[in-house]
Length: 422
Image (cartoon, rainbow, N blue to C red; front, side, top):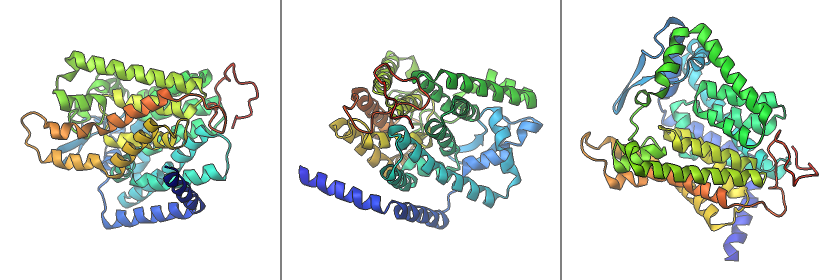
C-alpha cells in the first residue's frame, strides 16, 4: 500500500516543479482545440444580441434562434445583467469571443488560487504550484469546458466571488462582490449564506445593499422589464429549459427523470430534499466549527446547485473548488473523500454528461424516460452528496496549515493567537 503512495507523492512533486509549464501547455492545447473544433458560444450570443433590448423594451420577448432540441434561447437573467452586458454589443463577434474566453480562462486561475487561499491562507510556493496545476486541469473538466464553449458567465461570477472572499480583507469588497454577482445571475446569491454562516455580518449587509442598489438602478433604467421580471419571470422555470433533460443536473432534474414530471408533488421528493438539506446543514456546521472557509463555501454552493430547479451542467464549475477541498483539505486521506474525488474526476474528465445528452437527443419525444439513461444522469447529484457527506464527517485537524479562518469572520472562542489570518 505504501508503494502507490510514494509514487503518487513523487509524481506530485515532479508536476509541482513544472506547474507553470503544465499550465502553459494546457492553455496552448485548449487554444489549439478551440481553433480546430470551434464551438458556437450560444450563451454569449444571447448576451450580445439581446442585452440592448433592455433599453428599447422587449428584453424578455426576443429570442436567439438556434436548433433542436432547444430551438430558442431567451434572456433569463435580471435586467441589471443586461445593462452590465451592453458593452458586448459594441464589439465585433470574433473579438467578443476572444475576450470572453480569455477572461474566463483567467477566471479559472482566480478560482483555483482563491480556493487554495481559503484552504491555506499562508501564501507560498507549494500553494502557488497547486493553484497552477489545478488551473491547468480546469479547462478539461466538463463544467468548465462547457462554460468556455458556451460563452457562459459562470466562471467570471465564480472568480468574482471566490477572489473577493479569499484575497480582500474589507467587508465592503467581499459583500459587494457577492451582491453584484447575485444581481447578474441569481445562483451566486447562495454566497450570502456563506457570509452569514461565517459570521461576516458587515459583509452580508454590504451584499444586501449592493443587490438592492443594482435592482434599483435597473428599475430606474428599465422599469417595465424590471417589474415583469421580478413579479412573473423570476419563478418561471419553463423559460430556462426542460427541467427533465439530463442537461439539468439539479436534484429536481434527477428525480424528474427517475420518477416523472410530477415529482415535486410526491412525498419522496420532500423526503429526499429534507435529507439533502440536513446533510448540507451538518456539513456547514462542521466546516464552521473547524474554521474551514473553503469547506463552508463549497457546502453552500453545492447545496444551491442541488436545490435550484434548474442547474445546467455548466453551472457545476464549483466542482473545481470541491475537488480542491477533497484533495487537500481535512480528511483528504479518508476513503469517502478519495471516493468523492475519484467520482468527480471520472465524471467531469470523461465528459459523461455531454455523452448522455447526445443519447438523450436521439430519444423519441414521447414515453417515459429510460432508466438506463436516468440513473447515470444523476452523476453530479451523486458527486455533490458524496462531497457533502465528506464535509460533514471531517473534523478539525490537530495541526498543520489546514486550520484556517474565513477572512473577515469573527474568531472562534478557541482561537487566541490569530496567527493564521491572511
